[in-house]
Length: 241
Image (cartoon, rainbow, N blue to C red; front, side, top):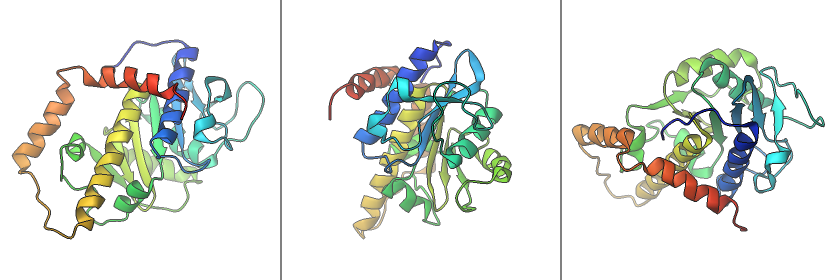
């Protein structure tokens, strides 16, 4: 997705709240756990994140909290913030100036693939979106310790998607829409892989040359599909479910 210029805090709130509701709609939420964060356009050292205790389908632009990189809520009525969310998200936002949004999930498919030694396989078109662009981070326990942050950032590197071993999925976007789109794609790739493996049949892998070519086609996005996708998803987020 093409990066867009800096917008208002309200626009960031609306996009981020939509991402939360879309994660719930597509079955990628985990009760009140996991998190999506967005950098404030005019205040890059501050982040928007959900109020710990809200279901993702309940998140609204107004309910989002503003926190600093130490996890302190800097304005508004004080509310709980998930410690693991602070540790994971502030580390990536601080290290990656391009990280306008960071998404993290604990889906059945994502966690299952994170537990497989081979990780994500290049089995299909969707998985090839991540060919050569997917990182892995070893499980160290619940992400409550700030000394894990340096290793988390080092493992992510310049990539925009990472599988947290024995834990879940993480994506980074230059916009909220990009982070969500990558998360949706990574989740779908995991679901497809598990379905193929469950068949018990031999798995057919595309040749390496085709894998690389497909990844390049995704990166070029000649039809501007990423922008169109987010516009459509924003409309979906506002529909009742």
